[in-house]
Length: 140
Image 1 (cartoon, rainbow, N blue to C red):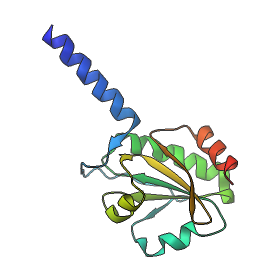
Image 2 (image 1 turned 135 degrees about the vertical axis):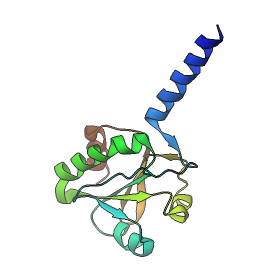
Image 3 (image 1 turned 45 degrees about the vertical axis):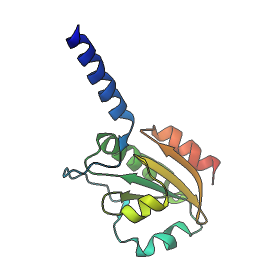
Image 4 (image 1 turned 120 degrees about the vertical axis):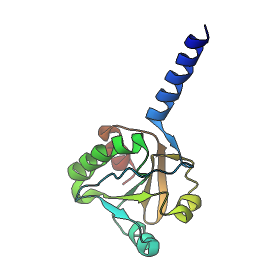
């Protein structure tokens, strides 16, 4: 009986991890981003980037987060298919804690769509490329 309860708890924990990660843990796994997506670690020009005329989709992530790694190819696809209609950037919450706090990032992956410097949409967890593209088109 105890084994069944433990197995159930483990399955629930595994499933919850698929959809989002808490932002408190640290890790060392290195994820890479493609050439279309810029990883921002110097926050000096972040405001300049989000204040431009082109909508900016910011992916708040961490290298240790499995769902964040699942989002990497999805974000690549969105960037490739949307082209100049959107700018996609990634921000590591472990390396940029101040910005994560400013935008109240509680779980990752979290995506925020900025238009003219204002957050017009925010979503948490793994999403499909078509969903993200529809959100960008709706808010552009």
